[in-house]
Each structure stands twice: as structure tokens, then as C-alpha cells.
Amino acid sequence: MAKVSFSNNGQVFYTTLKKAVDQYFTDNKIKKTGDWRLYIKAFIFIPLAVAMYFFFLYGTYSAFAGILLSAAFGLVLSCIAFNVMHDANHGSFSTKKWVNELMGYTMNILGSDAYIWKMKHNILHHTYTNVDGLDDDMSKSPILRMSPTQRWVPAHRFQFIYMFLIYSVSTILWVFLTDMAKYFTRKIIVTEMKLTAKEHIIFWISKIFYVAVYMVIPAVILGWQTWLVGYLVLNVTMGLTFAFVFQTAHIVEKTDFEKAEEKPKTIGYEWAIHELKTTANFAMKNPVVSWFVGGLNFQVEHHLFTRVSHIHYPAISKIVKEHCERFNVPYHYYNTMTGAVLSHIRLMKKLGNEPVPVKIEDRSELAA
Image (cartoon, rainbow, N blue to C red; front, top):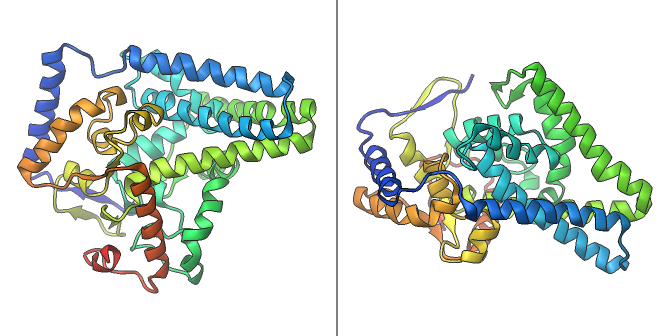
């Protein structure tokens, strides 16, 4: 089984940084979890999604307006995932555990499963970011080559083009393929899952709910042709939105990659340094982007302080950046979201053009 660990020697950087961030919350007498700025998003996006759903079923609108509304519905559901589900499943939405658990189930309403998501995201992705063989977020091979350590096939020459199609249907695959594969194998790549009876019941109720609410009911009321167009537009919007928020945080030209080996491997620096090497921010000075994507443009801060709500990321980013400069460790960022998306596309093109896997230390071709 692939296993990676990090050096425990001299963890001065993260110890010092954490102390400074903790002091920020102490000095300002604020909690690390969400406040009204987060709760108002939940009060906006969740009722809006419900209202839009029933308007689709019983409202009057033209075919073109229906397409636009389907795309808007996809954006609203994406905002729920970014702003509500994400914080809740990290335990940073509220100080109350039951509130986090309740809001975390918005993931199930979107079609996936909160338990599986927390396993693959909170534990694996956040511990082994960009580690091929452990980080499920980059395990798209052989369809997509997202790391220089992954196997290359000739089709990858065109992945920077066809990846848009893969991203567009990713939420449908997520509901009916990848979740199911993880559930029945009880594994996320090589990491085993243990589901309780409660988790089994929740998993299947969620899938039945999804099929009924997103497929059967609208198809019966609207007709299957109308439903199918709306369903596809909804998922294309969500898939592309998810892709270009999450992929721009890690699969870009400025970030590093590692590979898990069959034999235990120790990376020669502390975990926090690894997160800084494999993560990038974008559009940090754009409050509109920050509001809609739930602070996920501050991925550096999120990866270093997962239990801190995203509403605090802009403030603590100044502390993080200062400490990175002080300790001479990387702090990757792109000034705009467009710049980050273009960097992702360029990297995917370069990885697709590489005829053989490059050595992990050799990033000269990727930076060219």
C-alpha cells in the first residue's frame, strides 16, 4: 500500500504561524467558525435554490429563458457547495457539531455523500495534496493526466481540449459512477472506508432523493425532452464551475507534485511546507469572487487552517504571507481567476504533450 509521511524535524514554520493566527482571533475576540457573514449566504442560497426548483416545475417561461434559468440554478447549487457545504463538512460553519452535520448534508442534496466526501477531501486531499496515488482529486488517469508522475497515453495530447467535456459531465459521473465505485469497493484509491449502518442508509436515501427530485419529478411534470435539456445545462454549469474553482488551486503551473510509492516514503519537509508547495490562491483582491466561491480562492489559508471559516481567510492571509516571506517558503497566487484558469489549461496542455513521465525534480519543461 502506498504510504507517504512528512518530516517532523524542525516544524518551526507552522508552529510559529499557528501561534500568530491564534493570536489574531484572541486579540479580536472572534471565533474561528462562521458568523452572520456566512449565515446570510445560507439564508440566501438555500431558499433561492428551492424557489428556483419550484418555478422550473410550475412557472411559465420560454425555452431560452428555461436554459438560462437552468444555468443560473447550477450556479446557485455551486454556491451552496462552496459556501455552506464546504465549511460545514470541515466543521467551520458553526461551533455546534449538529449544525455542521446538518448543513454538511447539503452535499447529499446535491447528489453526492457527505461521509465519502469528508473521507476523500478532508483526510486524503488535505493531507496528501497533489500526491499521485493518494489524492483522489487528481486521480483522473488515464482519462486526464494531471501530474507529471502519471502514465501518459497518446490521447493526452488533446486533453486540454476534451477536458472541458469531462468537466462538464463530472457532476453526473460523480453521482452515478465515482460515488458508487467508492461505495461498493469501500476504497478511495487505496484507502479503505468503513461505513456504519447509518451511513449506508443515508447513502441510499440520498441517491433515491436525487433521482426523484432532479430526474423523475421534473421529467413527469415538464416532459422528458424539456427535463433533459435543463438537466444537462444544470450539470454542465456545475461541472465547469467546480472544475475551475478547485483545479485552479492545485493543478497549475506554480504548484509542485509528488508520488506515493509502494515502499513508505518520507517527504523531507513538514506538512505545512508541502501544502504551500502544492497550493495556489487566485483573485485575492476581488471581493465578488471571494463571496461567491466561499473563499476558495484563498486555498493556501484553507489548507493550512481547515477548521477556520472562509470568512476569515482574507484577514489571516496577510499573516500567512508575512510568515512565508519570513521563513522563505513559497506563497503561490494568481492575481486574477482568469490567470489561474489559463495556467491550468497551459499545464494540462504541457502534461499532454509530454511523451514520457518526467522526473518529479525536473520542472523545467513544465515551467517553460
